[in-house]
Length: 205
Image 1: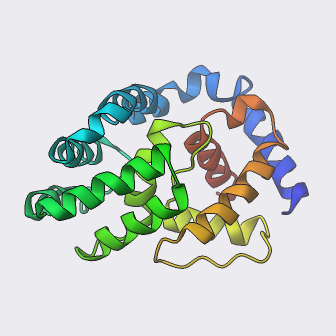
Image 2: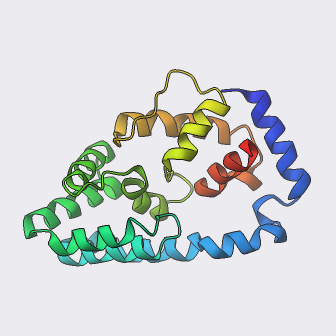
C-alpha cells in the first residue's frame, strides 16, 4: 500500500469536505444512492427466517438489484429475467448461497453464488457482492471492477491480481487490504464501505 498517496488523498478530501461524509456538500450524492434505506430493507428482506421460502428470496434479490444505483441499467433486466427462468432447484441453491454469505460459511456462499450466476452470464463482482454489502455496510465491501483495478494500480497494492470471475480468495485478500487502508484514515471517511471506496475513486481523479 502506498501510504503517502493515501494520506495525500485524505488531506485533499478534507480540504473540499471538512466534515467528511457528513459534509452537506456530499448530501446530494448520499441521497441519490440511498444506501442506508436500502440497507435496512435488505436486513428485513433477507432476515434469517425468510430463507424458508426460496421463491421469496429470489424475488427479493431481483427487487434489490432493480432498486440499487450500484448496478448498471444494462444488468438489471437480466437479473429479473434470470429469476423468472430459474427452476425450483436453482432458486434453492440461490437461497443457500445468500444464506451462507450472510449467516454461514461466506467462502462457500460466495462460490455457489458465482456458479449459479455464471449459468446466466451474470457472474459479476457487482452482483455477487451487492446483498452482503447492503446487509452490513461497515464490514462487507461492494466490488466494482473498474474501480477495483484502478485502486490496486494507483495505491500500489502488492501481490494481488484482479480477475473478472468473482472468487472468494480474491475478495478476502482485497477486502483485507481495504480494511488496512481504512484504518489509516479518519472515521469520517471510512464508516460506510462503499463511501470509502468512493473516496479512493475520487482520489484517483
